[in-house]
Length: 78
Image (cartoon, rainbow, N blue to C red; front, side, top):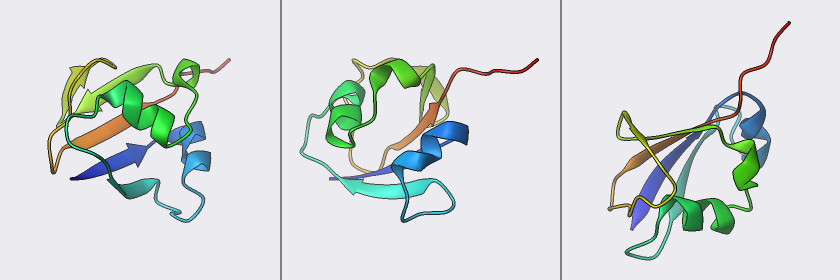
């Protein structure tokens, strides 16, 4: 199945081939968000907020074909 992953801010470094931070990932059926992060070699501690199809989610969410996953790092500033 294919999942659209949108990486925001500092997480874009995990998609060097995509300047937009949007990547299509082919994953096995029944994969969770946390398993997707591991497959993409994204450190879970760098992800503060997870959105699936525009709704707040967590790492235990089982994904379905065509889902859109947004990954956001912690917000910093000063």
